[in-house]
Image 1 (cartoon, rainbow, N blue to C red):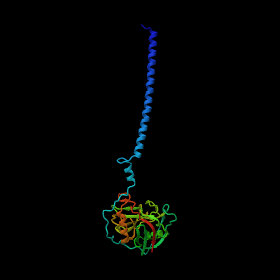
Image 2 (cartoon, rainbow, N blue to C red; image 1 turned 120 degrees about the vertical axis):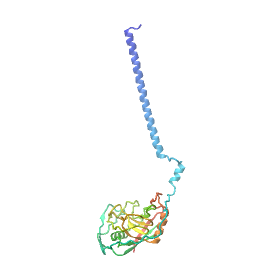
Image 3 (cartoon, helix red, strand yellow; image 1 turned 180 degrees about the vertical axis):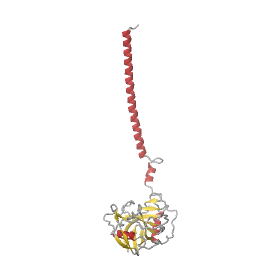
Image 4 (tube, rainbow, N blue to C red; image 1 turned 90 degrees about the vertical axis):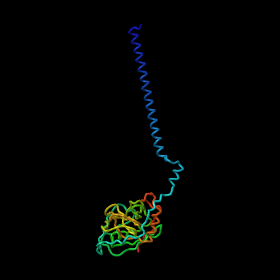
Length: 280
């Protein structure tokens, strides 16, 4: 029978064995934890790579075909052929009106300058032609509707501001317009100045109307739109002239080719590049 000293020695060795096993167990747990973490990281990284490089639902051949496919067509369901009724101010303007052109950011085309502030005529019309990649688009600018706008447009034409630009936006659903006048082709460019709206509550819009685009009240610059069909808009866009019937037929062809978005609003699939702009 072991004496007390022997029992103490046995207890000591047992405790040492327990401590050793505990240390080894804790060590194995740490190793397993490190390996598990590494596996998880690899799985996550692999998943991210897979999501970034895979095309679900098609193989690489289909993906390549999709990326090179022709733009979608979203041609208008219909385009009215009747020209919008002539727009007139209910109360004619004075023969001369005062125009102000305020600086606004950088010009999208270097060297463009604002017209001088001061009095301009509100009488008569100006014939303008946009020589484009789809043919000549004939415009009639009407000073009696928007003398300050006509003055600005003519000034930009004389500075060759519209030359070598593209009409960057076509809408075929809801409203039917072709928008031009931004040398950057992004819809954000302007001439480096702005001027006030020349609107009145009786304005309505329709086929053949030429109007200014804006980003809010009194932010007119160089962007304009030609309405080839329907356009149910509030009277917030300055009307400054008309587009002739033959020119509208050319725009109809562009509209019937749709937009690059396939959703009724985007760059026209058939580019409309303005090569020259002139006034008579």
